[in-house]
Amino acid sequence: MQTRLPRFAGLATVLALSVHLAEAAQTAKSIATKDTRFYVRFQVPSASSSKDEPREVELHASADQGTTWEVVGVAKPSDGKVLFRASADGEYWFMPRTKYASGKYLPQGPPTPELKVVVDTNPPVVEIDARIEDGEVIIRWHVADQHLKAESFRLEYRATTPGAQWQRIAVDRTGTPDEPANLRGETAFVLAIREQATPIVLRAEVNDEAGNHTVKEQPVTPPTVAAVGHTEGADRDGPPEMSSKFTEVTEPVSPRPAAPPSYPKTTTPEWTAEESPPLAGNSHGPEQSPAPAARRNLSNASYRSEVERLGELPNGPSTPRPGNEETLPPGVQPHLVNKPRFELIYDVEAVGSAGVDQVELWMTTDGGRTWKSYGLDEDCRSPMPVKVKGEGIYGFRVVVETTTGLRSPTPVGGDLPDVWVEVDTTRPEARLLSADQGNGDEADRLVICWEASDQHLAGRGISLRWAESPQGPWSTIASGLENTGRYAWRLDQRVPRQIYLLLEARDEAGNIAINPFAQPVSLDLIRPQGRIREVRPVGAAPAGGRRL
View 1 (cartoon, rainbow, N blue to C red):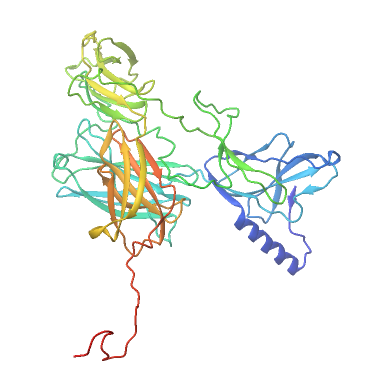
View 2: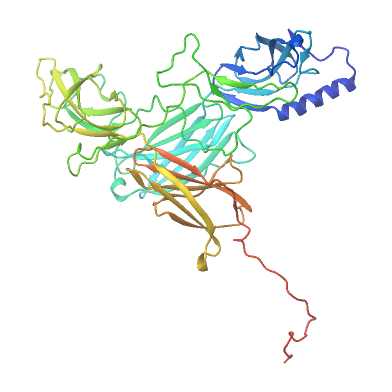
């Protein structure tokens, strides 16, 4: 069934319907999703009369921006939702219409889109061009996507030395108005002296509005240093050179988290994507649960409608981290990761021509007092993926056996691990306290105060951002700040009269806490002002004085 404009309608009628459709399309809420199957939810109000009960709800959809409409699903009023399957990427308009016992339909009149859903299954394209000159890393990037979420762009680097952690790189995430689907930029920073003689790895990640996530890693080597380190696929054809020694702990690039932290909104959107129970062929873990969705009343028929995505659900709140002070030997710093899934990179040595028959991973959770086998590395080649139960400190050793039966020692009680890994999934505690005009030499500045704490708070893990609205986009005031609790921001003419503030705190494991300031901040009192107090003729003496 299709709803079309009348074939013989006059020009005035066609124009009137077109204007009505254009106005309705502007007011309809738009949602982007990477799922090609989703539920469109609705709620039909109770009937005012028992003689005119609602009988069924038709979901009308248009794939050509309202030129043609068709019924894509019919449901009982008690069902509350209709499943929709998109045949391809694109923008789909939806309108629910209820049929009553009397035969009438609501809403009446020409088709009016109540919801627009953009189906986008293509992840953003990320390009990085970087070089190192005299210890300075110069980076250019280009990110492209039709529905790009520019504020989610994140750039990090990590040295290739063992134990090196990912470090955040400050970037400008604002795109150009003439190219909203493109994000281009350039930045530079100076490496620490200990990092200038070794290659580094850059990592860029970004989301689009549909939830597609792209991660790209790129090695960068100083001109005078040969590339070193593990390369995926290296030495796969020849026999391994062996040992039972770890060289690095990394978080796997795949699978990555569904999205980096997004900046919060202080207002509830009219339409909200909601996760759905799995359909046939989809499975979700035991920790997944449907997320609540915000709804709105539709004025023309008192509907409430929304999109319910089919996909992975966000993780629940972090559990309190256990006390680990007695697990680690004095002076030992574990490798920090913020997810229970990571990779252990190991080397094998002294195998000779025999070759490796198996590599077994052993694990301790009590500092080496007891050990148990975690399992075998199926391909006997680094890296080995590991998944643990949750937060805590874990110790690991690998036991290697050659094809001739020669085996490295199995750890026993009292043996120390080769590597310590602490899983920390707890976000820092962070809160903006105040934003006031400074005094004296700081009279032209906004003094921002905050408090942040974490067991592993990064040394320069504080960032401050501002936006014209609670929804963003957010611009950087300063990043890479020490946790001093105070920053005096010198304002310029680009900053509007009223802004919203946001605090971001990062720990060494990569967990990020985001805290917005509850109220907007007025900057009128901080800007310099002048006032004319009198008028006098040229050459006249000042009031109360005489002319010389």
